[in-house]
Image (cartoon, rainbow, N blue to C red; front, side, top):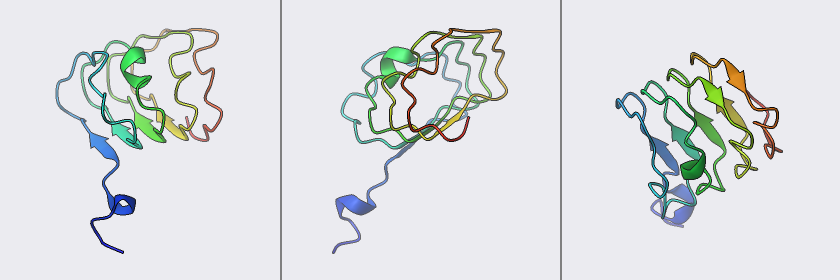
Length: 109
């Protein structure tokens, strides 16, 4: 077993504190095995729903410390394996009735 084998590959994406204001659809294409995504401490004003839909194996994600004001219905519906989701320190004033629909594995919010 090699230390460079697939079982030891880095499956996390650290994009925290990068002044990111949008995450366009397609930007995660080719990263379908990504398990951890840090998008905290940026300038996001909305949940990047379409971009996140490309990450079916995501298990932990933080969107904390942004400027998100609304979480739309089905925002995380394609993230059925997500266990941890951090949304703290945003400016959330409204949430869709079904905004957390599909988060069957979620343990920490």
